[in-house]
Length: 487
Image (cartoon, rainbow, N blue to C red; front, side, top):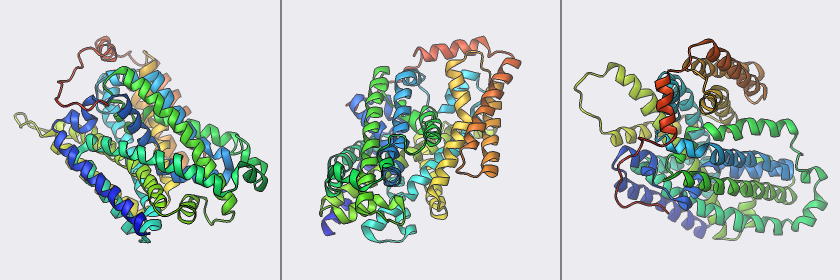
């Protein structure tokens, strides 16, 4: 394992070096939070694909393939569909707004009265997303170094918190590009063909497994619908995803770069399902489907290749973890703390060092994420809570604001409150993993949004005019900074 260890150590050291490099670039709020809004199509595509394809998509995607066969691709496939929909229909308008958070967009659209409540919901989502990604370190480091769960979480979490705190979005962008390349080589170019060959090829796989393993809808129509509702729509409104859209240097970069990333996700989804199906042939009686990835890597890959593929899994987890962490800190600082602080701030106070403040919040949220990850055991439940809150509470007011002119601030606030409360109450009644909470919570949010919006005074004409100006990209230019990275 010495060669494998060396590969991993070099990879982790490189991540920290990228954090130090990013610290030297991030001299303004725009540079620190959205990489100066200067990413070109190739870098934008790579980083967008990296953040959406995390540990759940890699380890979990292979696990679903092990359990259901090719239809196990649907979870990651719906993530790709959501990214494609975001890129084609909404990304250009989102990028032109030149904001930092989803709540800022809601304030612009509804006249400045929707931010704090939506910020709390978005903060809860990004926090739980960061926690679930951090928990995944335990699986990878257990295979690598045979360390206990707590040490694994602290080790992986500390590295991500360190490079994210140092350089903000610049560090995360560069590390995500490295992680994207490592994932592509490790999972698509190495693990996929090796797994198929070791399983005896597709003909052997078909001969040894039940026919439902090769049924595209074998996982079940209701499950696929739920994946679409949670993950496809979740991609449209998540702060972690929008914050990457804000990094694009132009409308076309956001649209076409995101389309490339979404297409890559579809390929990655199928690859994970095929690897899991091959693992089912080789190891038909694993105690857990989620153990399929680690088992096939540990037992079937040669020295060196094994280290690279494990680095790919680590890359998948780190990219999602760092993206969720900076999103969580951005929302906590800009949408919650800054607004509350503004209520009691005294006139004449000096302007804060915003980079320093955001850096402090990344460190604070990072420590909180590590502590919660150590205390929490069920990754699936935590992820389900996060996406149920996001979709149930924020999907309607966000898409309503983008698509329906008659929507009002009162309608948006009511939709957030009723949708979020309904999801929490229904999860308590039906169970966290039930489908009903997000179904009924979303319907309740939609009904309240429409009824309250129609029953209240339309949004002020001046606010709507300012909103249209921002959507058109007028009056939102930020000062240029030297030495752009626009690949």
